[in-house]
Image (cartoon, rainbow, N blue to C red; front, side, top):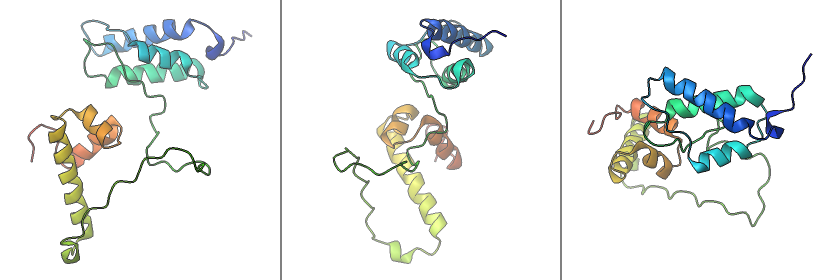
Length: 170
């Protein structure tokens, strides 16, 4: 039986393995070249604890390469937990001095008393918000997602749901 130390204590292995897994995934996706990782992405990879060890690293890297939409620029976005959500309940009490984002203001109630189909009204409101922010961000989905506090995948799901995946759809 061979016992290896965990990835988090094997200095230098994260970069070598990340590069290997990323190049392999880029080849599968038929990228013309491997752009590498940005400094920030590499720092994040090195600083992560890797509780899942090499298998977790491989999954994180393959997901990052698959989701990156510009093979000419170094990969700059790494998602360690694909199931993380900005709406996930907090695990414990929040300290009084902790900085928290202010909740978004509620929309004006004008015309709400005439709503007879709540689901349709919510869908229309959500679509209007998406269209507004897409236009504000020149249809850049990454910056639109960030502005709305969503992950890129969450935004893509909303766009698909409302038939807004192509620019100018309406």
